Length: 515
Image 1 (cartoon, rainbow, N blue to C red):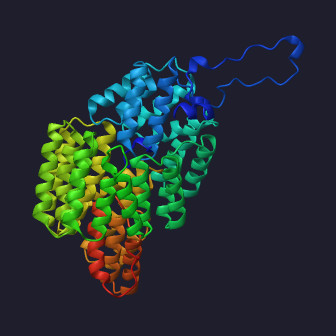
Image 2 (tube, rainbow, N blue to C red; image 1 turned 120 degrees about the vertical axis):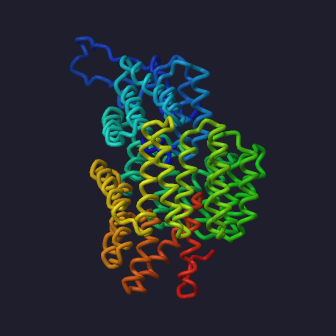
């Protein structure tokens, strides 16, 4: 499910009134046979028709589950997990909460717990059971099956905001079908006006389309709906940064940091502003403060990973490797197998970014070995290995290992063929074909291949500009770099490196975003 794939990108006593799906299933009346005297009249549908039930005797558990899902959709896993745990405190046997909680917990043991919830769900109403089955399929990395189950869920519960939000999230984050996704997300927002998740994703869609005013409006709605929540205010700071309004972004982040509830997120947003101003040391100080405030282990590890590429952006490769070692040590202490693998993978990317391809090949091989030996879930192994294949392809193709690169490309092509609804994987394969041709000196062919990449594939567009320049089309290369710079991504320090390197190429030759 896109809301819990991490890319990702996920009330409520009050929302219960607007969204009956948040009520316990036991409270939903069942249809009865009509007396003969009124048999000719249209039968009233049951209260639960078109909605996803939540089988529990605790309304508080149901409300907490729905709020947790809403925060997951909004992209705040840590806050979602708080509410999922709260739901299980009210009802330890709430299977859908067990499944969602363990889906968002790394490792093979958590995957087993999702399996157990799915196996225990056979007697639940069909829509509720289908939601759990979709979560289980995604945890195993079977995205195609998860997508089919989400569509089935929507057919069973067309009046439920969560069903529309799940389908919309997958349509955008996986398939990048923006209009289809937006349609479902707007319907989700209509069905539950108190939900913030749909508006958060609508903001992300507008960002990918370059519609700055629409992105600010969507994220602004969330900020207005949660005026005292540091996470919602931090997200508004991010979208202002995306829109090129750094001073406003800084002001919002500082105001959010001053809210009564201490939270890491406003300081992380402030760090992003500082990094865009190339104040790297100051930005890392803000990240360190954010880590000190965070109460979520995964968030702290994520902030540690974020710092790795800020060192690369500043031209400090050795410091980046040291930061990766710190991440690995902390991940092992936290028993987070995903981050143990990521630490090795990030070393490979850091090496590739500075042109140390032989070192990058070594680190990518180490990362692959870890991805096979660590106790990962299906989704963890699949997503991490996809990233490692990119690191392999990059360092092999540009590091004079074309035979190895061909083997890596074959794996990427197979993944793309097996994932017909995943535009990200197809884009990665197009980049792979292009970077292999680039390494072989066929710059024109490389540019043709990489022109097929999706708009959000920053690495592909970075190399597309290189290929266009080598092919003699300097105007196209400058236009590609300008488009890449206009993305102004946040919470993405890898992009910061591409941005810094692109700025050096663009120089004073064309107008840049107003930063």
